[in-house]
Image (cartoon, rainbow, N blue to C red; front, side, top):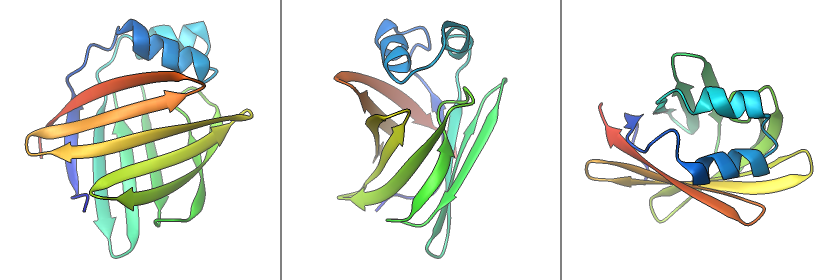
Amino acid sequence: MMQPGKWDLLSDPRDPVWDQFLQAAGMSAAHREAQAMVRPSEELGRDGDRWTLTSLSELWTDQITFALGEQVSTPLFANGIQATSVFTEEAGTLIQSFESQGKKGTIVREQTPDGMTAVYSIQGVTAVRKYRKVA
């Protein structure tokens, strides 16, 4: 089961595969350039069956509140594009299946003892980002 906590990005924000993923997701060059300059944090909270996933950086804060299996409207990588997402939990991983602009993708977040690994996939492009647990 996913546990509440906060994680800071360890991966290089200028990773070319991350940029390819963002491009495949429909992010503009200007937004991708801004993404390459920040190391966001992710914070996961839980209150009963309601979860809150917050992405924080120097440039933006996005917050999603959801119940597992519920379809919710979500921002897509702080670029002004909205997506429809459904979150599920399987074997200790939080899976976000999303669709935006006719494109379907997933974000699979898996906690480790000292961090979290997030695997982002869309249109045949997969990027892996590592996070360090800070709280």
